[in-house]
Image 1 (cartoon, rainbow, N blue to C red):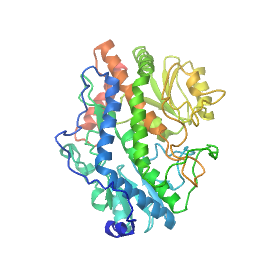
Image 2 (tube, one colour):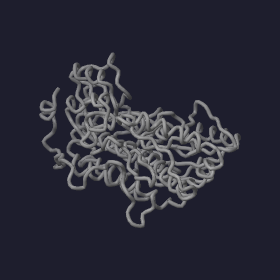
Image 3 (cartoon, rainbow, N blue to C red):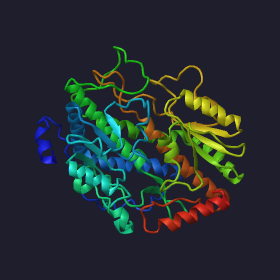
Image 4 (tube, one colour):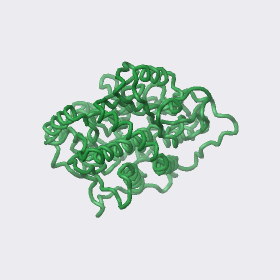
Length: 458
């Protein structure tokens, strides 16, 4: 089904949100990162840039996001698959890992050409091989696409991209295109003394767009009397629970909540600075800074080997915990009392590692009794997000669309900017930061950054 045929299936009562996409205005490109505003802490440049970028997408792409939601819902109602190859950070499953609270059971991570069939939909703005793109086109699947810094689909910086990356073109096969205005560099904070900017935007930006689509897909399913199961361990909402309205798009409510939580990052700047101090003390003392998440696809992957990320960063997951008394670890958690996180936190402490954490402290806006990660680390940030999804939709057994993934990633890069600032203040040196691997100069640059981090520690 092509886009024109699909549009005939859409209800005539869609609210007037069909704002057309337009070329970037005089605000210009986001390339090479943003300078801080007068008096602005370097750490807060990142959440400010995400607010700016997300606001631009909402202003110009709301119609496309809503159209994508209808396409997702209609696909589910037909019994076909929703393939999720949507960028959620460093992977396409960074925020839809096993048991993810608030994730409706309608998504199939990745794309399998052996199982995909006509009638399926593919959500994709993550780098996909030309061979898989050709398979999608041959099967005439419905595609919701967006640009990736590792592709030939960007509005800015295409001249810097390798010929191999330019071959990755999603726009020609897309039925719906959601423009995010990203560029080939793909990081947002200009760091004094560094040619490479810090802080990739795709985690909070693309993941917010993803949940905006999913929110209205769930609303449409509820309107049609076809609710679906939801992952997680949230108890069934009680009769007094405020239910989401089915008469208006939910993506605006999700956007509003994310903007509110992004603004609240400043309220935890003291904790973030404390955490950065621990990390910098560790680096200057010859130790390693690890980033942990239970699942490799989540924060552990986001922090390491990343465009716009530190060359010194290392990761830990539930698969293996290692370290020494010279090291520290940033624990990324998506529920405050996750048993695996607490077990691994104990293991880290037994090795003598200093610990800090990022993530929600509440379940249903209540701090759990007993052990929680935030109580057992030296410093914590992320209190603005809850464990569960944002929307209690009529007919759904649990709330859908969490905000914690967006905020955990945002705080990681906010913290990273503060780490960079403190390194520069204390040493006069800029830390080693990676460029996007699709750039023509990247291979040589990243080798230099790895050598710099290995010999200097940061």
